[in-house]
Image: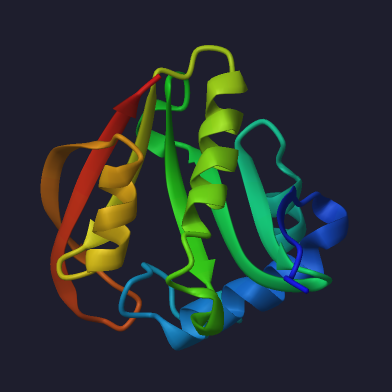
Length: 168
């Protein structure tokens, strides 16, 4: 019997599971996230509630295998251009579930959400130099490279970040 894999958009009622998954992600992978466990663990409960409950500026999705949360991903109105752009972030799938194409479910959910928002014309996704898996997923979903820039990651190292855009 195969495991039932599905996506569910989280609401503020899901803030504790969102917090737990995000802390797990940044703890285990601060080399690919801009956040790290020291910073993220200091956010108060209001931060987690507000982030997951902000239905205008963001959508956070949980990836489930049966009753277990196995991943998450978010889409956020882009700080520099909230009127017409969104950015993908917080993409994380637990190690035992990687390599199964499950990131496509998270991409679809976020692209669908962005497409349903009035005025959104561009979706932005990025990855750190050397993150071949993220690069492959981004390109697979139709994104085109728009720029490269230096970023400092949660582990304190700096590297090139590749930024891609998808017009909708």
